[in-house]
Image (tube, rainbow, N blue to C red; front, side):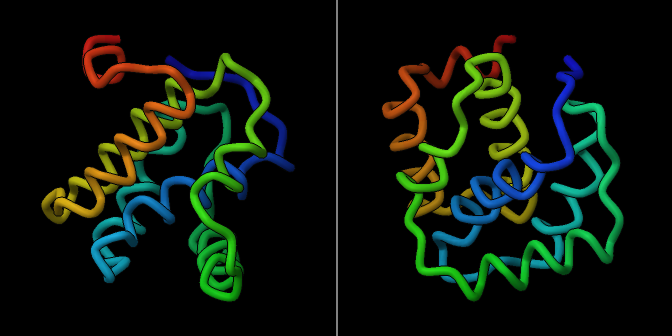
Length: 120
């Protein structure tokens, strides 16, 4: 699945991935790099390390919560790929319970079941 997206939405997508991945109190290099590596498999964009570093810095300077990040995504076509990328990234260093809770919250807000994410 490779959804076409605009350059403007890349940070919004990655902020969701980062927010859920950071719920265990640590945003590991493994999670960050996995999100960059896997991004082109889901979307029509490659992410440079420099671009990702800027997005990560902005993420850490933000006080937004998961609900705010999720609310920025208005296209239903990209919600499932975002969730799929998120679970890959967050679990790349072991899925911790707080990450799982945040992921379940995202599923609930967007009206998806876990099975939708892993079976697509």
